[in-house]
Image (tube, rainbow over all chains, first blue to last red):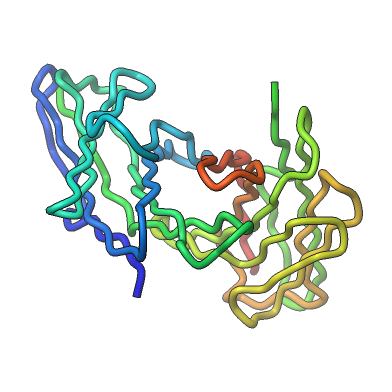
Length: 116
Length: 113
């Protein structure tokens, strides 16, 4: 079955330190992977995606993600965390069997807390 | 540029009352449209999706229904709300291509009392 796992419910980081939010996936065929961020009582905002090509993908707000095919991972990273990065982060993969419907399979989310 | 509007932002409804949440997309045509529900501020559950006017697919049988009366309009409805319908409802759209990301509305916080 296709799935996305975010193994950490919460990640705590000190401001200025690097952050990593982990994501692993299981999908048939080539994976199309996405990261989203959600602030309280708001919709999800798209951060970045991996479709093909360079394994290091750069996105919005200084975030980047590294695609690792052998480990089936797509971890989100940022070199220097800001307090304003504190939010809920979702990893998603396109459902390979969704055809033209472009359905996404989401992980359970990881809450990032950046402390001053 | 494309924008997605979702309203209302918050809603408190009594058990047994009807529901209508509306979502519209601007700046694009023939979008795929989606309704999600998010419970307890965590995981997203896909409720309905649509690839065209009048075409609705349901992921999970439930007390809700969806309609797409116009190309860029998606409506989530219920005839009689249950307590378990409370949650955060999100509308989203994508383009038709396989590599496209989804864009989300701001969400509706529904509390059934």
